[in-house]
Length: 247
Image (tube, rainbow, N blue to C red):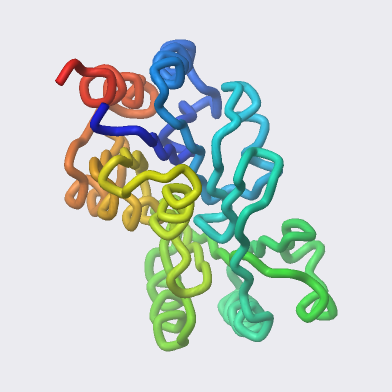
């Protein structure tokens, strides 16, 4: 087979609008796995928010969480973790406070928002990702400009209404490269599938980059293939037409 690793975003990609893996998509994923394809969850979610879906599929393969800040050798064994400088987390929190915008911060110790934020956590916690959510386009643009004036940040999104920030150079492509190292594969053997800007690096780096039918325009423009939406089993079609095809 030309492609041996299927790296799948979760929200808007693997999961339908009900946050479930459809029976048809699961059926085709299991066909791919039976044929020897490695199926890798590649998500902006934390480990705790992702692992149950891997268990549903019976995955024992590596997993990429928090947009690449964590790579798991198996669903229960950490292989690599990239941490944020806590000073950068403090600066990003200050922007959220100044702009009065909803924020969330992922740490190894948990997820923190306004209701459980405490400055004393800054130096104690191991920080992985920071994010902002607002439907105010101008406000989001202003925050993005401030972030771009800082150094050490990788800025993406997982929806048109948020900004997700990882340490610079940390993304789903860097995560997929580590998974390839673990499995003895090349990036040319990877199919990366997603719908948002946090999938863009992996889609551009993979042998086959796939945008979902519901993907953001920039993702579709940079993909090799645009498949059906997450509610129309787009992943199943890619497995059928590009991975399990007879060359």
